[in-house]
Image (cartoon, rainbow, N blue to C red; front, side, top):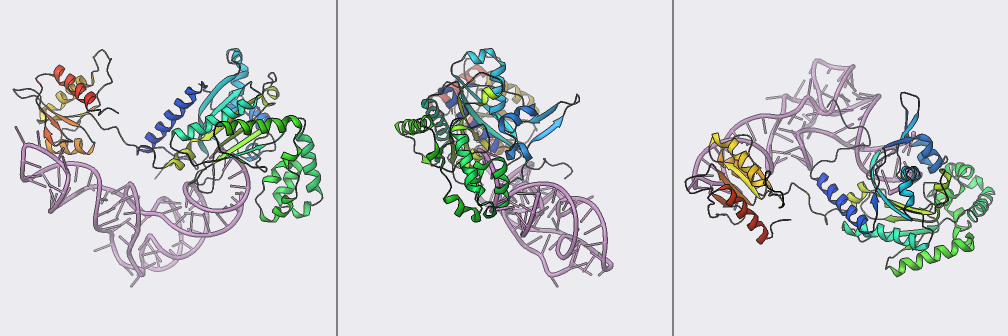
Length: 431
RNA sequence: GUGGAUGUAGCUCAAUGGUAGAGCACUGGACUGUGGCUCCAGUGGUUGCGGGUUCGAGCCCCGUCAUCCACCCCA
């Protein structure tokens, strides 16, 4: 094989592509039902945007960016996440900023240079929503509720919602210093990664999974104990709201996320069948990000769901995927009738019709095969009926492929099409 | 970025270092004017790629690419 997809990327082929389309459609429907509207941003942005928002000390910025210079020497980066671009678009658009709050979503590929694995790709898809300009705990609740609703809409109900608070400008720096002080006395007991984290981002030490670090973590100061009154109240209110909405959650005091811009509420949703990974998505509040990117103080919250993982974890509950079964397969009864069969198929679809009705799904042979072969193809494609062309003296012969018997002949194309539409409606064959 | 496993037909898998096969799928045909069952036949592979050892390599050795698993991290 001379060419192959680049490492960590893949083609999404039928029938998987049909499952993807189904999940996308479900997600869009739910997002729309909550009043969220789509924003499509470029797939690359100025490198600075990500460095400034995601954070210099994060893995994403330090080793996972796809960065390149364009012909004028501008440093550009394939987006590793969707929040920063969306906030950038929000700040550029006076129209969007008039929404108060703004409910927006995005859906598309993201890029991170990582070692591929099941559920982890270099190009992966995210569905994300952002609620900009709302500070109330109700906003946090709506976000998480929306997240869970999307999962339910695609048949995923057994998930675990992990919730934590990281504090705000008032209490996080204090807590951060306490953590640094705590570990500072025991640097020799930490793993190499954690010693580096101690320099750059001490909070990440709390999330370390190396066994040798665990004993030390036990005694570390807890974020939730260090929250200021405002953050403590906010966190409590979010939990109360979620319980009122009937959403089960689990407080995870050591949940820290991979992006630096989060404040207060952070959450992650875990599910099964994801290989070594376990998160289908996550998100959090970012009350300072908009201002840090040059906008007004705009408390906001958002999440992103990994499409790839959503598809992996949902498995069978979805429609198996596959080409939609044709309502009709037009069979050319004689070798010379192939083109006529195409014309009949076209007429039955109603291409030149007023367009008021949902078109019939009609296929016809394009290889001048034998009647027997065409019937086999029609049968395998799941066609509900076969129409034979050309018509004989009595009209168009029709065979019901499901019942296994011939229907009544139809005198001409117009009555044939009407008859087929009527059959579809009354027998609820339409999907 | 670190460590380990794997790579043969569209799919699932065979082949003591000695001519690359099976089942399913696919294509055509026979039999019901007109499918499903059955039967017959056929297409399909430089064994991921590139070197090396050997009279001879799918098999042994080296490299490389890719996937999978664990770590890391997250989506």
